[in-house]
Length: 157
Image (tube, rainbow, N blue to C red):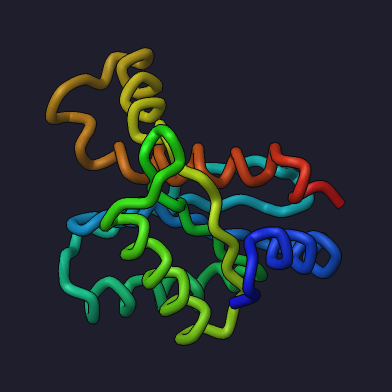
């Protein structure tokens, strides 16, 4: 991975102008996955990988990559509200490095502050509350991560 987020972003924007993008909301227990097309810049929830063990997680991700053939992967970067790093920040960065190393697909980190809260509110707005949110929450958060990436200036062609 390049030395800085700015290098990664500018490199990706200048090279990747079309194709499928997968996004991940990394968690210790679950990983939310979203999908979108770079040209359309619309993100959609795809699935939640409900597995804490690394090997089955990466097996499922390998299936998704085989099926969807993404040109770019976006991983949510978990930080405190003030931008300070915490333990999950390092795990997100490690996950991103593993994705790039295993699959050889460029990876971009995207700030994921408040995405789970936004996902929770989104589900509540359509009447899905409490425990019924669990199967969808992480993939909706991944959708918000990907949509933020698409909407940001660094995703512009």
